Structures are given as structure tokens and as C-alpha cells.
Image (cartoon, rainbow, N blue to C red; front, side, top):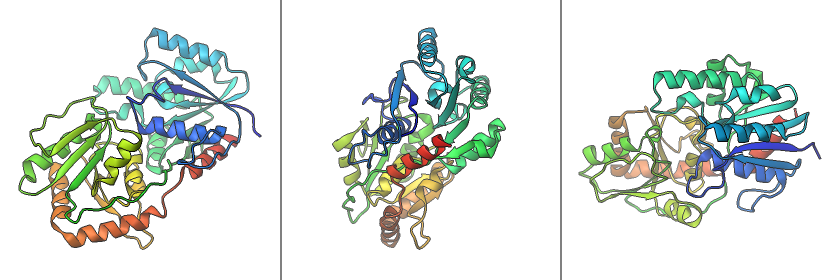
Length: 354
């Protein structure tokens, strides 16, 4: 068995009130590496002991107390140790990592470049970009969750491509959804923030599709409320476990109108249930959507920040039975080719062992 791995994580990693793709990725993969996996996610890889340090704070811009806690945590890690740091914690505080760059082997897992968050001022984005650049140049290896994200990090921060490795997320097995003939039940699963684009979806539905029959459930923690008037739109809040499974199982189409997305784990979660997808062509979403073995895409990709294109794609889905049948067939075929969490853990283990 390899030497121990220390993982430095945001304090919210296991908070059911704040689910996120990044937290889900961290938790499942670390469980697999340490041997604590659950059967629904995969078989334990158990390549090395894993010691977790979860640090509370308003990452990536922590207060003094959080900064001190992170500094203490890093100081307590023995010399010559492999340390996997979640980028949300690490990328904004290069001055805290600096004293440890030579005595620890640092791996930084970037779920989203800090400056790509929607709503930042130009000055704040530039500051976060500079801090992230300094952090990533200290890392032995930078880990990205898609080829698109790896290319963006390499280009943005002038990193050698050989030092940026792709470890794409897996997906847990799931029961196929039972489709309604009409295809009218729409689902979006994502924290309600400007970056995820729920405002675009609401606008498309209320302003351009009021003449059609549909319902839309938006599941996710509401960070930025989206005004709406239709009774057919329901913001369900954060859902997990059986409640989330139920939401997927009672849906016909998955919609993800994100303005930016490094991968889009919810896309593969939908495909695991044979749900076709309408999503924006941003970041790693095309990689997550993929193709059926015959080359047919299991969904429709549209430009970002474009409610007209979103409405047109939704209208096509709702009014064209042949299109629905084709996309459902492609989604079922794509389901069989999706990456597993076992694949993710093995790939991450390979990257760490190099």
C-alpha cells in the first residue's frame, strides 16, 4: 500500500444543506481511495490511508480565523507527504501554501477556476485569477475534471500541459426513469445561482412557451432567487438521496442552462437514468453529454446565455414525438458507456502515484 494521502477540503463537504458537484466528487473519490466506499458508488480502491482535514471558511476569500485554521492544518502534516487540496480552499490563498511547497507534494484539484464564477467584478476576477495562478504554479500536479477545463487552466495560467491531468467524474448506477408520452416533465438540478442559468430557463418557459403544456422542477439550494409567475415552475430546494432519485424518476427531460460549467456531473446523472438532456455548449458539458455508440448525441447543445435558442430546443422537444423517441434511444445507449466512480478513483490513484 502507498504512503498516506492527506486531503484538505472545504468544511461544507458533508453538509446536506449545501450539496455541490465538487463536494460530491471529493467525498465519493476519497471514500473509494480509503476503502470506505458505499455499494451504490463503487468498489473501494483502498490504495492508501487517507486523512481528511475539512476547514470551515468562506472560501475562496476566507476570514482571519479560517486562514489560521488552514495554516495550522498544513503545518501539522508530516514532511514529504502527498496532499490533495480542493481548489476552492487552496487557490485563493497562495501565501498560506507557500511555506509548505518544498516539504509537501501538493496536488490541487480544480472544480472551477475561481475567476470563472459569474457575477464577479473585473477587479475581483483579476485578483482571484492572480492568486489561483500563484497557487497552481506551486503544485506538483494540477487536476482538472474535463479536457476543456484542463486546456483552460493551462492557457489561463501558463501551465505545462503535462502537469495538468484530467480525472473526469464518474456516475453512480441508477434506475431508468419511466417516461411520460408527452415529455412535458422538465427537471433542472443545480444550485440556483446566476452561473447555472435558471433565470434563462424561467424566461424561456414563461415568455416563449406559455402556449404549450409543461411542468418544470428546479432542484437546488437557492442562493439567488429567480422571480417567476407560472404555477408550473417549482423551486424544490436542495434534494438528496431518495428525494433526488424521485425527482429524476418523475422527469422526461433534463435541462442545464449554465453560463459556465467545467464538466456538469448532473448531465451524466440524468443520462444514467436514460433522460435526454438540453444543455449549453460550455466547458466540459459536451464531454459529459458524449454520444451513443452509433454517434448519436443523447441531447441538444445550445449556445450559452441565449433564451431564444433554449426556447427553440424546448419547443422542438415538446412538439416533436419523433425527436423525443430518438433522443430517448440515444440516452439509453449512452447510459451503458458512462464513466464510473471506480474509473475516477483508479485514474486519480494513478495521478497521485506518479
